[in-house]
Image (cartoon, rainbow, N blue to C red; front, side):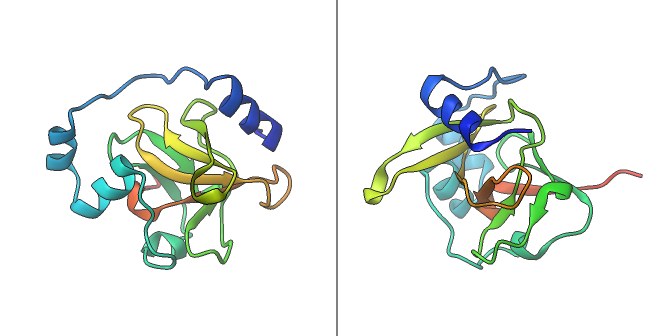
Length: 150
C-alpha cells in the first residue's frame, strides 16, 4: 500500500518503470481525444468541479486511462471526497501512476500522470481516508469506466 512518503519519494527521486509505453504525436492525440479530453490530459487542464459523472459512479468496476487504456484505479479504492472530482485511495498497480512536483499557481502539490502515456490525471494529496491517507483527486474526463467482469 502506497503512503504519502512513497508518493514524495517517487516525485523527488523518480517513478517506477511502466509496464509499457504509449507515445503519439500531438496530432495523433488530437484525433484520438475529444477537445476537452485533450485539454485536460495533454495540456494539464482541470475540469470544473462536479462536472463529471465519474464523481457519482460507485458500482464495481475498474477505471482506465482515456488516452491509452492503462488500468489506473479499481472501484474498491474509490470514495466520495465531496471535492467535485473522482477520488481514490490507491492506484491499481504501483507503476500505473507517475508523480511530479507541481508548484504552479503558488501551491505545492503532487501531479499524477499516467505512467504509460504521460496523460495528466490530476493530483494526489495526503488528506484521504485510512489506511493509506491518500486522496487521488482525478479529472473524470481522463478516465474510462471499465465494466467489472463476471
